[in-house]
Length: 114
Length: 111
Image (cartoon, rainbow over all chains, first blue to last red):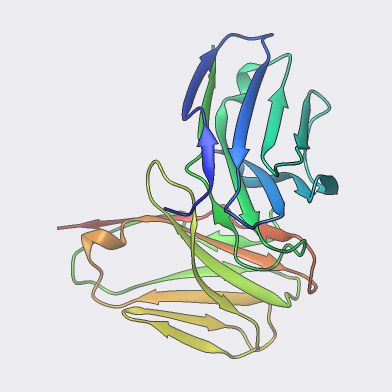
């Protein structure tokens, strides 16, 4: 158990819809990272938040957005969903803002868009 | 084009065999990590290497960072079914920069 909690574990929805994925980092961790893992693209970095503020942005689509709340949990919002958005979405956390220490990953949210 | 190329992509072996997986790049990394991901779970860190030529051992797993810090290898001795999983390498080009992950090597160890 990494201490990072993600909900929901599984989500099935239709094209055009919007979903919200939730992440609670390990106790004391200030940084939250979101990754997308698909079969043909591997683990792709989407976005990082540190203590409530956006710290780094990766290959995140404009249809996607995220935020980190004062209690440090984070949400990833995916809208106007397309079939290609079907993937595993992982949240990871670390204590510091630097991206090079050990990342503690949650179990992921599997999104299926039909 | 992937910054980190892992090979092989898939590997299926029998219990007791040895294997090596590779992580290669044309870029220099200040540090490199190896993670293992099991089905239904997130990746878990196995090791971090930071010095060119560094070798680290974790029981039956041996990790090596290339002298030029552009590549790394993971060698497993006497593989066991419990070693089955997706092995991911991840590198940071400079200290504090974001990690870039390779696409992974899917290892299956058959009893």
